[in-house]
Image (cartoon, rainbow, N blue to C red; front, side, top):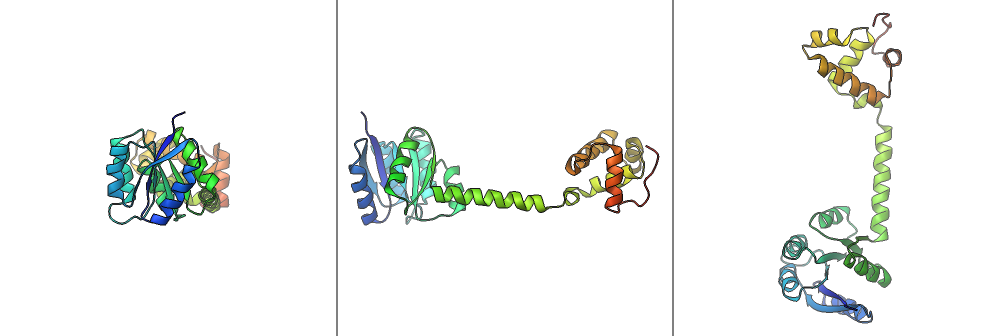
Length: 222
């Protein structure tokens, strides 16, 4: 069975030695080289042709993200797995944008790192559980924030204007004439505001306008 060829890119010698010792105990892995900066990572990735590069973030000199971009440009089949101390979403996003296949925190258990290497080598991706939980929490927070936004506040000024005129009984053609717009444009505004407000007919629209005090007396005409 062919071993997973791994290049270590980290500016801390003792850390590299510890990772090398860990990987040397795995029958399906071998460390083919070590570098201490991004520039050397590019050079050695081209020379040694590793399957996976374990890339630190924050090495001196050449940016780790730019190094990753270049490695992926030269050898698209090579997988880059970020191994870092930074539990930062911005770094995670940038790492994925430049072609990274995974993001592992340095305080992760050894088994997580080994699993991550195997996952990305097989073509998958990997995120440390803490980073994944952080992303989920952030997503939930955004959903809650969006849910708290009043629907009326999502309307554009033009949609609010069309809402008022519709509720007062004007037809789409009349509104188009008054606002010097095409009928298709007014129809689009009408569709959008009814979708945003979850309104499905003229009666609901008038009732909503009264509740929001957009109009005082509903018009009986269509």
